[in-house]
Length: 167
Image (cartoon, rainbow, N blue to C red; front, top):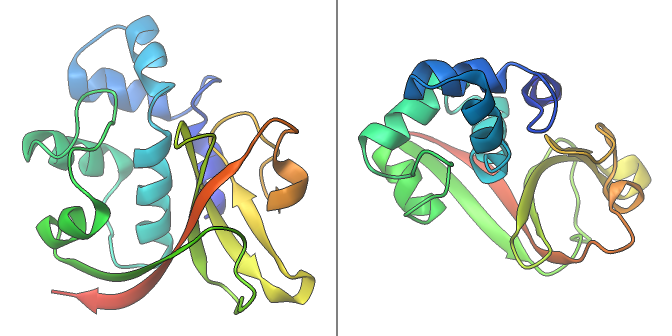
């Protein structure tokens, strides 16, 4: 999921030109809209890293807009299982209240913090019993989850995504 470093929501990155192109708007508007794309970006990052989805972020965003699955800010209207069904992706999702104790190598996670106001992608590396964070916001990229969280951050849930297959 290291590729997510190129899609920062709060710095100039690949994200803003994609939003500009899809919505046909100027850079400043695209920059503001991109600040809200954390759920969409982390979801795309996870399914791309699992290799169950092979399209670009631009195509992912366009598809969800066309199918009325999200709005321009990236807020989702459907739950992930329904979205995956629309995209012909089969993924098992397991929800945890905190870091799971049964980490295996190379598992993918989405982490919701602060009452679901921010979403991040993560990957497990059990040799250190932690999840490595791939945040498209301001937290340190590629750092252990508990080290990367700010003192005021509170984990709302952690969801593990497992590849089942494609339709």
